[in-house]
Each structure stands twice: as C-alpha cells, then as structure tokens.
Image (cartoon, rainbow, N blue to C red; front, side, top):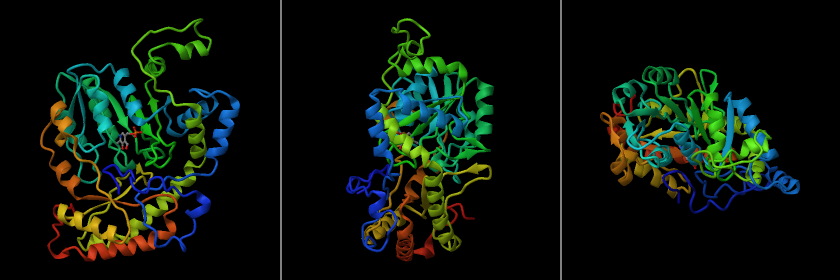
Length: 420
Ligand SMILES: Cc1ncc(COP(=O)(O)O)c(C=O)c1O
C-alpha cells in the first residue's frame, strides 16, 4: 500500500541492498514493483561507523560541514545548513522571514502540507494560487492578482524537480517587497536557467526524506541566498542561541538571543547523507535514464490521446524526481491504478489540494479559481521510479500497456488533458 505522498507503507521496510537486487531482474521479476525503493550506495554504514569513531555525535561535526560545503558548491547557494527535514527548513525560513499573525503567504494548493504548515505555525494565512497546467507549478501569471497589503512572501514549489518560472516570480517579489522561499524539496540536482533549484529565491529548502532522489532517511537543508539572513539562520537553528558563534570562538559564552528551535541533524545522519552526495551524479543519471525510457515508451499513447506526459519547459534541467501521467479523468485514473495493482505494480496519485483539506479550509483561502489544481489532482498518477528499477522496466511498460488498453480510450477528453 502506498500513501498519498508515495510513502510505501506495506513494503517500505523490505529495502534491498545493492548486492541483493538492484541489478538483477531475473529471480525478482515477479516481485511486486514498489512505487519507491530507497537506494543505498553501500558506503552509508562505513561513514556512520567513522562518525561514531570520531566521537562527535551531535550536529555540526565533520560530516555536516562536508555535506553543507558540497551543497553550497552544487547549488550555488551562499550558505547551506543541514536540518532534520525540509519541513524543519521551511519552519526556519518562516522565522527568518519574520512571518507573523495575519501575514499572507502566496503558495500553490497543490503541494505537501509542510509548505503551508510552516507559515500557519507563525499565525500566517496561506493564500492559494492555481498551478500551470503544463508543469503543475505555481502559475506566475496569477501571483500578482493575489498580492494584498498583508502579503509577505511567495513560496514556489518545484514540482517533480522541474523549476518554476523563477525570473518573473523574483520580479514580482521585488516590485512588492516580498521574500521568496523556494520549496525545492524535490529539486536537488535540478536547475532553472543554469541555477540550482533552491538557490534563486532569498531562501530555499531541500528534502532528503527516503522518497527523494538523495536521501538520509529523514533530512533536509536550508539554502540561504541572501547573506544578510545567514547569521540569524544559525541562531534559529541552535534553539535561539549564539552557540555556533561560540564554537567558532567569536563570542566567549553563548546565550539566548532570538527565537529558535532545535533543527540540527546528528552527525550519523550527515554521515549517511555524505555517502549519498558522493554518488549524487550517478544516481541522477540512472533516474534520468529511467525517466527517459518511460517518456519514449509513452509517446505513442500520448499521441493516441490516452494520456498526457510530463512537460519540461526550455531552460529547466530536471532531476527525474518523478514520472507522472495525466489521464482523462478520475474514473480512468482509479481503474488504471487498480489494473497496475493487479499486475503487482504500485502506482499512486499525489496531493489532495490543501485548500480543500480540513486544516487548509480553516487556515487559508484561495485567490481566484483553482481550476487546474482541482482538475489535475484528480487525474495524476505517479509511476515507480527508483535506481534499481532498470531490469523491471519492460515489465512495468507492458503492464502500463495492459492498463491503458483497459481504459475506454474512445471517449478520452483530450481537451482536458491539454493535448489540443
Ligand atoms: C513539496 C514538498 N515540500 C515539503 C516536503 C517535506 O519534506 P520533509 O519530509 O523532508 O519534511 C515534501 C516532502 O515530501 C515535499 O514534497
């Protein structure tokens, strides 16, 4: 069973180490193909053992510093701080942006709860704006109409590791004096006009949850692109104290100086992450190959009007975080997922739009209609995509053919799919 965010509930713990099954498709060919399978590079244990031997077990040790430096180089962010999760990084971003009661924050409704929750925790009102039908990202052309005197921030979410159109978003933010916090939970190794996702806004956030491309079980990072925010970010991450400055020798004792919480991951988590970052290029290449295989194999079905494939706009270098399809309607999606399940392949839908969720209705409001949000949320299905899927791809593709053949293609509404 797979939950709405793709967390593999039933087989999640049946993780296969590289030597046991990530290369060989023969014996395992009738196994259930999970939606997600966390990939291990094989060096995680070695680095965790080393971290233990070094004796620095809390945060901000050798492995944390290595990971942060790697992420700064790779993304181009001025400063990176590892956190427990992307959720934690978003909460830090909300504090850094001084978001308070009654402030408004513009974001898509089609996103994970944390994108909104981080700001609601500070008393802010999430203002939901519709998404673009091609990328399912925040529709930049609708942002300005949602700005009011209370608006403080825009939070673009790079869905599926495909960049939002950041140039117009940054221009709107500048015109209205707003802060931009990129939710790049799915975006490590992806770019917009050559810039790493998360490094373009004032702040950005990454996730290393086991469902992401590069993982540490739970984990995340805050990208600080506005250097003026860097000092306070350290304080917020260290429970509101100037402890980091103390350890650098910049002050002779540390004390409570600001708002904050405990957002540092332990060194063993950073050691795990280091093993993944070392392989980040190779993991991304494997995922991109799998993504391209799906994309090529499904071209004919798109031309036949059975589905719509993902769109990657020019200027966006994606990271193959996800391969999704848009079917004609909810009924067809339900039958498609059920057919794959019968063939022992897990596929899953994605977000329930936040504006329609009980908490979203209480805490937020929509700006304008959310037509694409509603429509696309009902029709989207995500296919298995993980390093190690390669030997099973023919089987998955054949199962997709069978599932599509079972749909009533004759009445598929291609207008609704954006094919006309
Ligand atoms: C868009 C988005 N934002 C935030 C998060 C939260 O990430 P984490 O699980 O690291 O807190 C996720 C996780 O799925 C996500 O997809």
